[in-house]
Image (cartoon, rainbow, N blue to C red):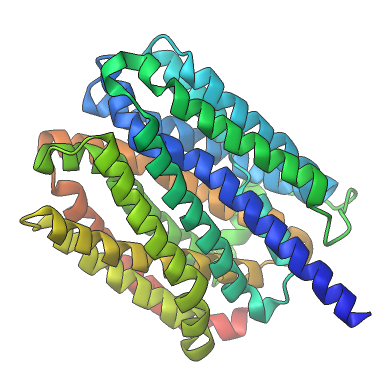
Length: 399
């Protein structure tokens, strides 16, 4: 009986990781294209970075809504609805005639893609608390593999010389990945816990007050916000920065993200679990932020593209071990029947960071220098390190 249950758990885990891979691959197809997609409409740098922020604004609104709904009606129907809807948003983006409607399509796509907390909740439902950091690392590895495959495919399929029409094929590919993920959810995903349809639902403001009063969750939210806002700013300006410094186009940027995605998958799928078992979540979180700091500094002062890629690899390792441990600490700190809600609040906070990050990064890129976003991100990591030490002092008594 136990052996059969173990096989079922393994199948459920593999299916969920496959769904994550397909969803993120579809999302990743679009990342290296957006700067050039915006250029096709004659958009300026700040308008292009708003394509990233519009998606994150949608996620900010969607994450707590979908996470709370998944606690009540189950993870499976929420995942099927949101993944299918997000796939259709890529088709809509392909046919947008101007930058304003492109913003609208990205916003809707972001709202429907606000299901990361639901995916995290599904994984947490099937995983004992002590194993969650390692399993979140596997989830992160699936993210990284998707983020490796998607940008490389997007860069290879894009034809910027054709104008907006040159981006139709990669956007259709993104939609195809999403629809495949939705089918996988409907066929293979099963609920690991009974939905609680009658559980009292706190408003977002009440949930935020509870989180702010919690000695661990409050600090995790702040650390995540600081780190994610800086990283999102880099992500939004990276294409513009490499174009300015090295004359790169969609293909080179897509291949760079492919390399970083493969490295990130290795870090999350292999190294994170081993490091957590030896040192614990808080120490590994701190180590990740130190690596991010070093990587940002190296990229800021890089003299050539190999040096810049080395810095990017440091950042990739850092964020690869930061995010699963932040999520694991959040999951362990939240009551079981509130996991979707609290993970949704966490992802909503991250989405808010992704709104602000590209906006201020685009401004300082244009007004100060192309390397300014790297310098600012490094500065933001310093107070986050101090907060991580506070989490370490409180985590044993809070959980």
